[in-house]
Length: 254
Image 1: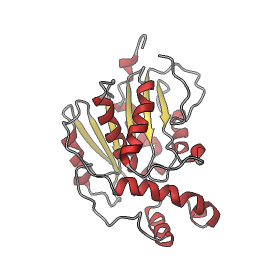
Image 2: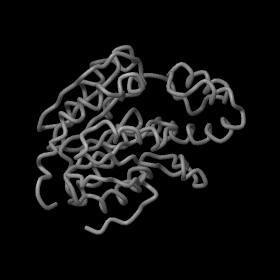
Image 3: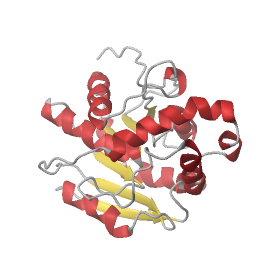
């Protein structure tokens, strides 16, 4: 398969020939650069592919998307051109929901399905919201919520000019998540692995509820930390991901 560059994926030069791909989907307000350091740590046979949404990072001049359907439709269009290798999908928070909806679309197209779906710090999609919506808050209230989540640097939250750029993107992402409506579907026939922080507000049973959407296995693992446990436990997370990604299925010609 001839793979052309896409604004949806952050490209990098690689020395190794990958046997497996790991698509990494961002949290609300996050961008692909969050995952760029993962490639140096994870099994070199795994090609880490960070996903960049419109309005984020290098796509800052594009209007951010405000519905989960728009995000999933666009990402499915881009991903279907990169399924020349066995793959898995990792999504943190909003990214977990986006991964779920994107894979629904890819399945409907008859595309290659992943070896596994990794969902992180996100309630199962069929569960009702556990808190009032954040996207309707004032800027000051929203900044306070972001500070409590511990995922945005204080230097960013204290920079008014930078916030003027970032808040509309974060608000658009939150709108997409908080206006999402689950539609019942058949479970996936690949395993789902749920990760979370032991001190996160996401309850264990809300993570466990992802098991409803998988018929080929489910596991759950908690790491020390809050909603952004990934920041402090990157190595442990990547070791877990590497152990659960069946890279050997990619041996030989793709």
